[in-house]
Amino acid sequence: MTHPSRTPGAAISPENVLVVQDDLEAGRSNGAIRDYFEQSSHPVASFFFLAFRSGALLTYLLGSLFSNNFTLIFVLVILLLAFDFWTTKNISGRLLVGLRWWNEIQSDGSNKWVFESASPDRKPNNADSQLFWVVLYGTPLIWGVFAFSCVLTMKISWLFIVAIAIAMNVANVYGFSQCDKDAKRRWTTNLVAQSALGSLGSGATGFVGRVVTSSIASFFSSRG
Image (tube, rainbow, N blue to C red; front, side, top):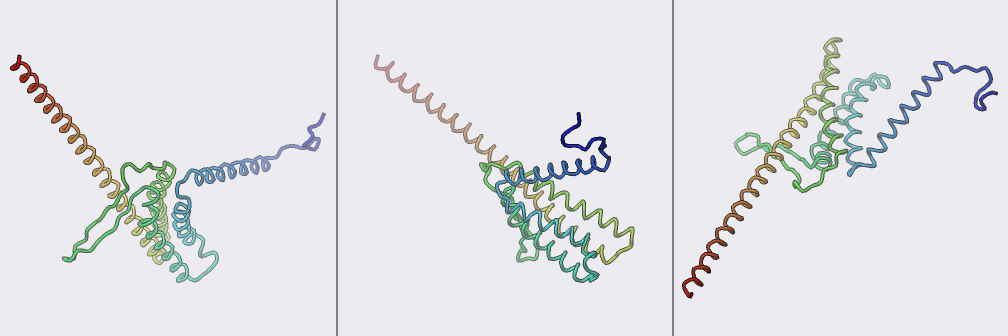
């Protein structure tokens, strides 16, 4: 008796097995991406957060396959890096993890870091938070690998692009890391202050209650 879906005597080749495995892996990847965007609270912000970063990386890697014009590739990569830097700092970070930072130049010429964070009552989305922090820290590492490759191959002009990319990505890493620390420090301080005020209030209420009770008892005992 032969299997209805197979030709009698046909054998499963290693190539067919690899094709099936690739299809399964692609299906799992597509399913993971679909699941994330279904769980995300801000899928549009997540999409552009990934699009600008991956666009800069892919343009750097594959741009020379479509054009021999280094200036064109340079301009496209820098534009994508600039879009990514601005949207990450002002939009993606605020929506995905509730953080935003910027730098102000004071009248004396010094720089002042300003950190903004959402209320501690804000319920975080774990999928958004995990995506943001993994991609934020992972992207400079990828550019670092490209920098090492440029040094080995002595591609100084391409190294210039990579250096700009690392500088812009590291700036966001530092800004959001400090912003996250500042937010946690302020939340902890507020919790301690609220706890202290609550203890003081309960202690004062108990003291007033004891004074009133003692006064009432003294009043009735004197009348008796």
